[in-house]
Amino acid sequence: MRMKILVVAAAFLAGISTAHAAGEKIELPDVEWSWEGPFGTFDKAQLQRGLQVYTEVCATCHSLNLMAYRNLAALGYNEDEVKAYAANYEVEDGPDDEGEMFTRAALPSDRFVPPFPNDNAARASNNGAYPPDLSVMIKARKNGADYLYGMMIGYEDEAPEGVELTEGMSYHKYFTGHQIAMPQPLYGDDIEYADGTEATLEQEAKDVTAFLAWVAEPELEERKSMGIKVLLFLGVLFVMVVAVKKAVWRDVHH
Image (tube, rainbow, N blue to C red):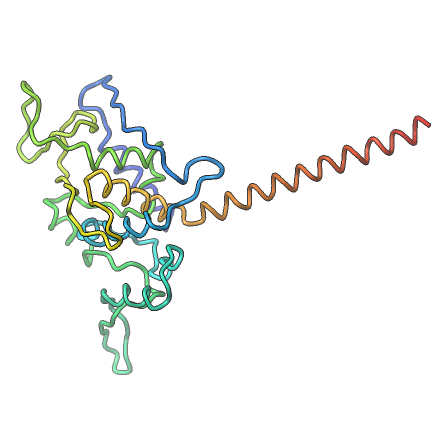
């Protein structure tokens, strides 16, 4: 399932980045993300803000099919908070004792409820375009975090002089061809952060990008920690092997 979604996401990103102007190279924003590098980690406060942006803005169109509500405990939420968040959504369950399906409040064990009941409903609500699942969107493209951040902050109110936009398109400085059909998702001040952080466009875009990076690789910190431990172990083992070798050959020479 994860591979299928990754393929769909990759196709989506490849499609929207197809050159409308051959040979044009777009320079994306170069952002220093906290999780980059061998010792990088996620900022839980930022991830919580990103979840808020996703919940209040992105979730109206985009799903997170690979995420379960219980996964939010890794962001610092306690059991009651996770239950309360999940209870905001309804899922279909059943059949009951009479063979009927029924709806109930979502539980922490449930996956994130998608915004639309099926693909056709999603397309019908978005002028025929299918809003892709965001679970692995960051991993679907090289420099995916910079790309998604640029996609959210690159809208311009007007096209430059001499550029004629196709009807229904917006001008985007980071989009290849500079014409994009997706409406601008963030404007700044779209939400009121629970921690009081100023909700500028750049802040919202960075926070939700960080959240989606965590969604794509929730095991990232654990994997890095394990990698460091393995390297330390190999380093100690190497020193021991060298010491044993010297001791053995010292005896042979004597």
